[in-house]
Length: 280
Figure 1 (cartoon, rainbow, N blue to C red):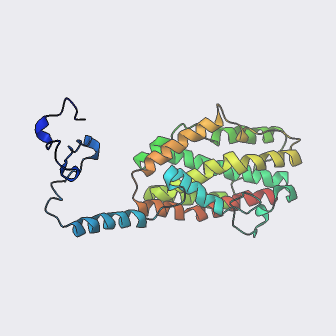
Figure 2: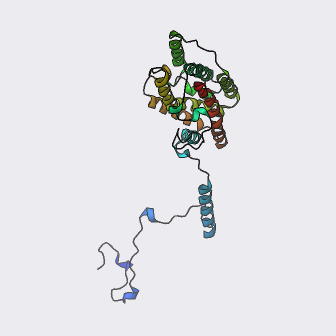
Figure 3: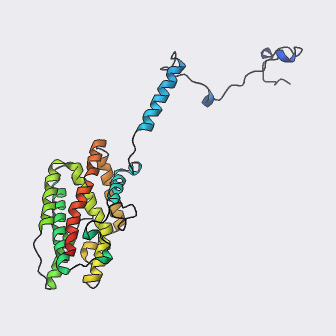
């Protein structure tokens, strides 16, 4: 039966045969109505399909880098993990070729070697903190007073060793070479410098702490040095720096990001040479 709200003019006579009855087409909701963009009106359907297919292809062909969706720090972490040995990290792919790459449990450290390691490490951290403070590139200023700084802590540790009767050596070649390289790099290549900044500070909070604990058990009657202590919540300090690094990298081109990642291997080389001093 016809709805009372429908004008009779829209219907054929009820005496008409079934085939001639025309029911009103219900109006589609707005979200289901077909719309035509002004730019597409008059354009052949094939052209529309080609444009859509080309856009989709360009999107699908864009190279995605491991960790990219989580921010640039995750990209740096991914590259760094690959340069660890399997014993050092589950993602590690590097074969063991150097003494310091063996499991720490198999190390035979000496106090004199550990002192050389601490002295050279202090020179590197002194250099990093001075560069950040002077900020030859404005972006470096983002990393002032992060809470990760180690220079003052190392000074306290070296003073403690001195009080125990040990002679504090001068910085050796590995530390001097790395410090000189960082100074040069910071003046002309900010992306590469940031790579070293990230790897030095973040590696120390991870594998560096484990090494410090093991060496302290072997040599220092389990004494925990200031080098391995931080004021405040370390995980939050690290997250704050991650956020700053991601923010700085947002201004970089893809080529600049790749250049930063390519510097990772050199960072590991310099740090490994200093770490090796523990075994000397």
